[in-house]
Length: 247
Image 1: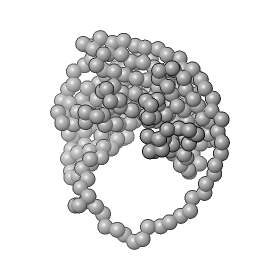
Image 2: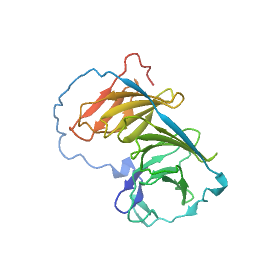
Image 3: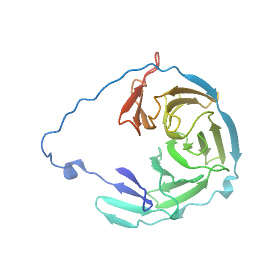
Image 4: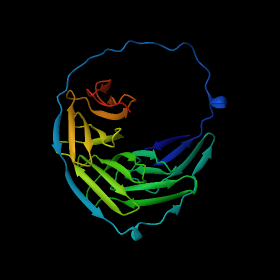
């Protein structure tokens, strides 16, 4: 099953793919092109993030409400979200319990249960924010990036606590991924950098990229290297850290 964010509707799509039935037929031979390669050394710098916490009474977190599919046409099922014309779906991610977390350009998040067909809106922080990247944790909490303040946040709906770390010199935290030790890798789209944030110490290690790179999405491979896509420059990059333990 694939989940797809619909930007203009706004809504989410579920795509149920069955390879034995739906696999497209091969159409000619695949094309091959050579990619240029450039290797450079990056000197990291360390910064200390500012920390603030917000507490909520969990009794006031709204209950989940039923939301019916707005349409089904195999292999797609669509749910339109009640977020108004001024917002659109930024990111979606599937948590370990099968529920979806959804960001939509506001300081709140949706949690969607596709089995029960319910949607729950949760306020997370008490200031201006546009959430982008989402990273679910094993304990049911969620990490999120705020592209307005250059910050990383953590929300635990079970206890009603949000935490936010503002990273100095950061332009726009875009995507998040876990390191093996629980630290968080992130991309800074405006600041042209890849960062590694340690939530236990509040320290961030920043690796600056060439100006105009605009790193967007990232993934961590089995060796612990950080792969990222560049919104400008038409390239993908790999950041390797000497002595880093593999996953």
